[in-house]
Image 1 (tube, rainbow over the protein chains, first blue to last red):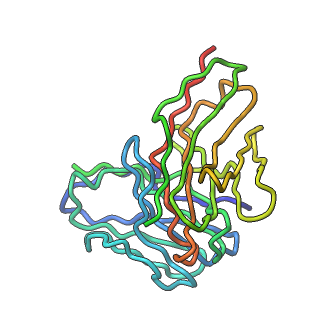
Image 2 (tube, rainbow over the protein chains, first blue to last red):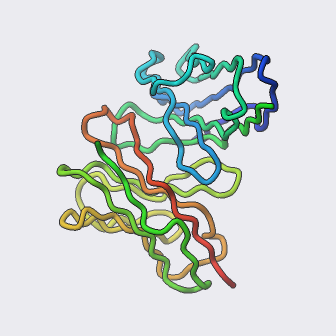
Length: 113
Length: 115
């Protein structure tokens, strides 16, 4: 199984809502990532978890709150988002090694109204 | 800081023609190098990667890339384009000093394939 799944596929939320994005993998990977991708742009790294501990936070606003409850799951909690946060949010996973492949999920397309 | 430059935001080829997508990186020490493809409304998929060893790397779907240290390049080629190759292509590097986590992506090149 080389699949990373993400739910939901699409999400529309108001600026006062609280929602969560979910990501799951069963490849035994111990590194998991959140990326944000705006239209016609490359993915931008947001967070990295390594062995379920937050390893990298790329100065992401606190309205984005990641969580890694176990080695297979990664969540991104959203609260009080802004319209400019509308984007495709990609989850990825990999082994803990810089030369290995990152496996990406299909993404959640988020629209903030 | 490391950077990746993809020359040409759009490349258009005819079906059956050679595909050449250019990528240059900035580093005195070669990082690990990757090419990813993204089809519309999908995540990224690895095409190929260079870590060590043979500088000509073969990937999926008939793509290959050659690492040229002297030119700090990692250009992607395919001898004969197919309509299904139309997608966004990202060159990426994994720098030496980030423990493998900070993959740096180029801006991307959109490949169009004409019938």
